[in-house]
Length: 164
Image (cartoon, rainbow, N blue to C red; front, side, top):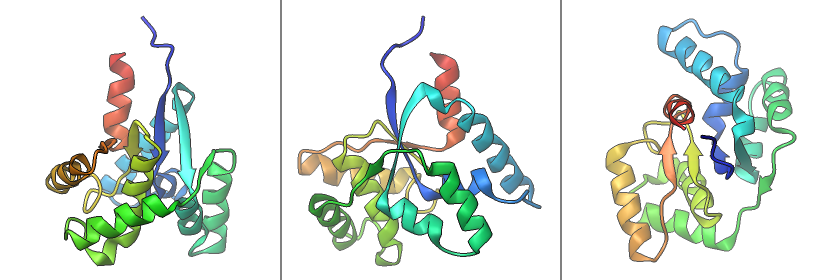
């Protein structure tokens, strides 16, 4: 039985980077790339979104790599950075849930939250897809009447697609 409602997915920059990077020389990096490509082939099952922040991060670095990253997300709807998102990101840092050095990570989480996205897709397991941090983020957001989107890796969401 197919679910006719598409879930929304915020694509964080690490996913775009794995999708477009030259082949990794590490086993884990190569696995992330392969899984990301497999998930990307099924992207039509979801409504994908990126943000101004993702574009800014994709533009950085090597010009050829940046061009590949930007091309891969060129047709995705763009979520604008709102005052609400900035305030939530700031609060996550003030509450010491997300370190100040990871301000962009806090903003990715805030954007997915403000826009009521179903899934935040990332390979960033240090500050975003980290269960201990997620619990603290969820508790904070609940205290202000918001919900935390499901944060997962492409591997986890690929499994979710297979289960439907």
